[in-house]
Length: 295
Image 1 (cartoon, rainbow, N blue to C red):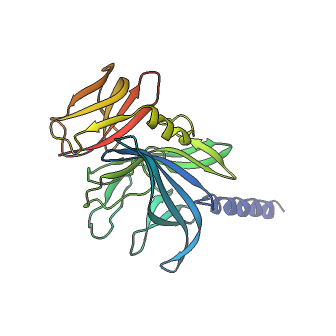
Image 2 (spheres, rainbow, N blue to C red):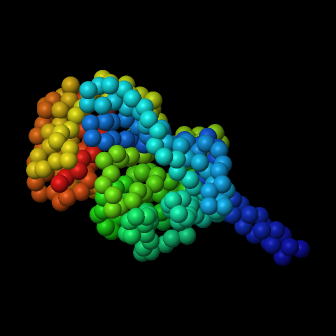
Image 3 (cartoon, one colour):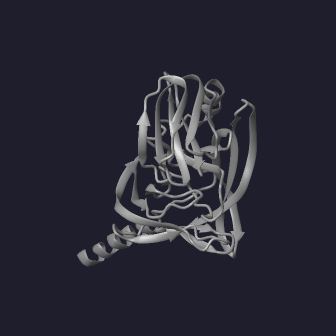
């Protein structure tokens, strides 16, 4: 009898484990900061029903961009849909030709895997797994792993912590082709929500007030120029900028300063060619993220 009960408990545990990965239920919504040359706002990604792609049932992920340009004009537009599906341990992403593993919760520290090797690019991002574990969010116990970017290529990269159901909480949801210059970039993560799970935001953005982004940008018009940059970039705001942090594509802070001015020139001559973040904190206001490309 004890053996039978043990078997039933193990069976139930296996079933619970196999259903652990709940990915992109209909209506699930992610918000990320978004920036391009002279444009800032946010990227809303929503799981909007099922589709059949490449013979596979998957979730359609719609991307909606909204924000303000350097002149203060508000606009909205759509990016191409993305398609994903999952099993108990993996999330798969449509590359345009096939599905590849995007997130893998069987990985262990020291493992290396590659994402983003899409046509016409032969090379993707090499990611080193540095940590694995579980975390509890909104009463749900979720697996996570952390990755470090081993190469520094153009485009959108995945780095930092990746949590099942949510995805990356320091970078963007999807990688982009590395060999193509990309001046329209999403990230960092702001918020995730779905009806059963509730809402979750990262430490980068301490709440899910993504609807206030347009208000922030309208009130705190901040511009960065030139972009692409040579040896110097200028940050200008309608209000005093208290702190500025410059970080690389992997989110590592390279240097910081406290200008306490509305216009600041930053020497970036020592930086290698590639994409970088500037996080500018407005005095008594929000932190606004800008991205620029260093020639």
